[in-house]
Image (tube, rainbow, N blue to C red):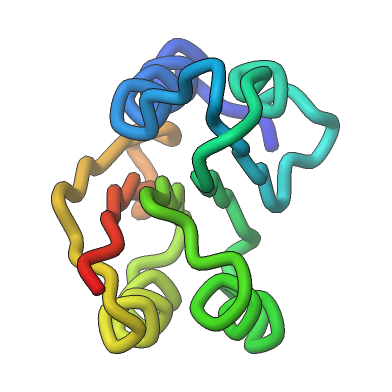
Length: 125
C-alpha cells in the first residue's frame, strides 16, 4: 500500500503498541503483516496479544474462529480499511466476549473517501 502520509501509519502503530503494551512476557501475533514491517514492533513474548491489519475484505471466517475460539488474546488492535467489514468482524468479536475500548480514525489517503480505523479491544469474558 502506498500511503500519502506515512507518518499517520507510524502514528497508528504507536497507538496500537501503546494499547497492547507488550512486555517481556507478551506473545504477540501479527496477522496480515505483509513484508513484516509491523512485526518489528512486536519483539516480546508471553501474554497473548493480537495485531491485525487485514485487506478490505476483513478477517476470513476461519481466522475469526481461531481468534475467538482458540487464541483468545487478552488485547487486540485491529487496523481496518473498511468500515463495513470492521463492523461485521466487531460484531463477532463482541459476541465472543471482547469489548471495544477505543476507535481511532486515520486519514491515510487525504482527499479520497478512504478512512482507516484502529479498533482497540479487550477480552471481557
